[in-house]
Length: 141
Image (cartoon, rainbow, N blue to C red; front, side, top):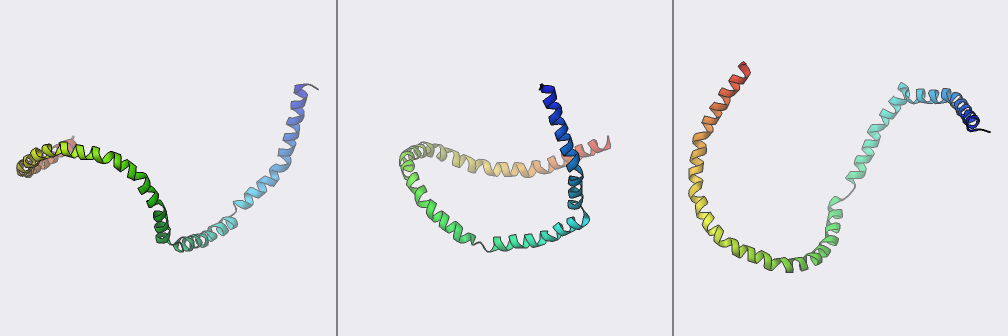
């Protein structure tokens, strides 16, 4: 038997199967999409939602969170202790280096703050008027 003959036989079998089952499938699809079936499924949705809401509301999230955190926290602390032992001196050295910079920047910010506040109070209305003027030009063109 040649490949063409086998292909023809398989094609005929599949075609016959499809031809025989097509009306059955069409009938099932029609019944599934019928208004009565859709109405029935839609009518079940509120009941299902009520069941879900009841199930969710019966869960004590506080107890779950408390027990989960109670189990995780000791493990996390055991993992963090060696890390903090390593990073502690590094952080302390960084803070020691930053302290002189902060001593300079702090008074500088105190001096510049009132000037910036005055500047924003003066420039703010001017920018608002400019924005309105440019907006008016854009909408008239």
